[in-house]
Image (cartoon, rainbow, N blue to C red; front, side, top):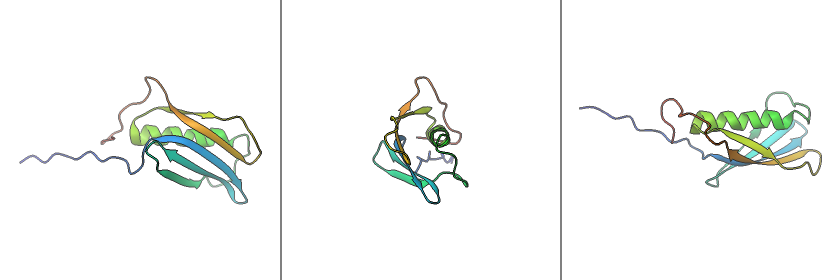
Length: 105
């Protein structure tokens, strides 16, 4: 009898938006998924300068979406309203991405 491998879905949905907040110990992020879930954490070991934070966070989101969902995305950052926080929406890149190894959605 041949056993079929079940494809495992990622434990979180495709990212939909991101919020960044500066704290005393570095930059924190919250990523809201399209399904309504939330991923939260801290960016890296050392706090990057405020001008580098969107690029670091954007790369993290791109890698997450491509690795776990096989979908290429970009972050469209909202205009800076106040120092110490940023928000952005995550959009799919047309024609981008490849299926992740070992499964996916």
